Every structure is written in C-alpha cells, then in structure tokens.
Length: 229
Image 1 (cartoon, rainbow, N blue to C red):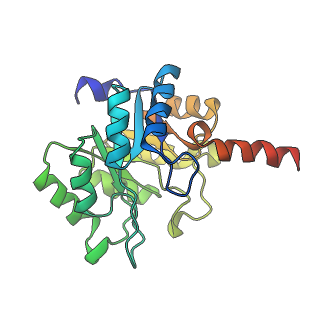
Image 2: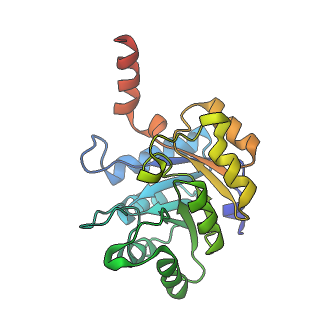
C-alpha cells in the first residue's frame, strides 16, 4: 500500500457527486466541493465520471475513489458496470476504482468474479473497492481479491432492503470487520460526526461521507422536514 493510500487510514473521504438531474451537476462545482473538503481536513475524495475526476485532480492533490454510474437495460448494476467504465476511469487513473459487488450479473451475464478477473488481467496494479450490501457479499468480495471492502450499497438492494448500517451499533460493519482480511471502508448513512467517530473506533480503514456534506438540497430538506413535523 503506497503512502498516498496509507494516508487515508483513520481519515475522512468526502464523496463529491452530483447526477445530471441535480442542481450542482458540474465538474467545475465538484472540483470546488473537493477543494472545500480538503480545506475542512478530508484526506480523500470519491467521485463519479472521468470528467469530474479530472477537474478534481486539477484542484486538489488527494487520493480518489473513482466510479462511473451508468444504467444498462435489464441490469441492476449501475456502479462501474462494465469494462467500458473502467477504461474511462483509467484515462484519469484514480488511486482506487470502486464497483458494484452485490452479486448481480453485469451486462451480457458477466459475473462479478469474471469481471474482476478481466480488470486484473488488463490493469493488474489498479486498486479495487467492492461496493457491497450484505455481510456475505463483503466476504465473497474479500475472497476474490478486492483490495478494499465497502458498505456502500447497504439498504439499496433487494437483499439488504430495510437494513441500515448503524442498526445495533453498526452490526453489519462489525460482522464484516470480523470476517474479512482486506481493509474495510465505511460508507452509507454515516451522516453525523458521532457516527464517523464510532465506525473509526470499530476499526474501519476510513470513512466515506457524501450527501450530508455535498448535497445541499438534501441538507435543506432535513431542516424543512424538521420544521414541519
């Protein structure tokens, strides 16, 4: 593990993403979000698309977890689903590439194991992060050789419907930590400083926080909802 990645240990990674339908959708704005995150003490960035990543790299010198979100017909996987997205990301060479590791088949019926094999063959030195939704998925991703295990998809799949990362004092994270050998990155519903502190205490490698920092429309909605309860 190189020094740049090692510097993420115990630190905050800020997810700077805005989809086309969102008000802040702009590579320039995401680069400024990353600059603000750096100013606040973040040690890494998670970003979507090579365009955003390139703009962020010009603004800050922080390790990046890169993804491409893209929908394919009759496919549940949308986070870096095919080699096309991996190739796009490799044009800007993020330190880590994250991909859906929920077990759903990719376009053309490709399995997760076969897809990882293809990536390893083409880009043998590239670090990979598994975006998982259950403990079993995390264990499988660990077995097939992902470099980092993430909890990104908890609550977003049929098999994890209704789950929340912080239930029973972060039970899912604790179970994953107890049963995998690769570093675990906590992500998903870590929306307070107290939660971030707690998952660090449990032993995660680092923590990704997104919407509560970088999606002002959702932050605003939480205040509005509180006023109207």
